[in-house]
Image (tube, rainbow, N blue to C red):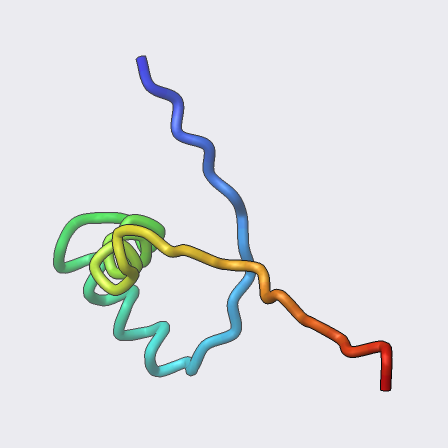
Length: 61
C-alpha cells in the first residue's frame, strides 16, 4: 500500500473564488482538497528545476 504524505496549508483567496471552487467540488463529487490538487497538477510543470546562482565578486578593486 502506498502512503501519500499530505501537508496542511492556509491560503487567503478571493471569497467568490473560494465559493466557486467549493461549488465545483460538489458538482464533481470530490473534496475541495482534491479539486485544488487536481488544478495544481494541471497547472504546474511536471518538473521544476531550481539552480543556485553563482555570484562572482572582484575583490581586487
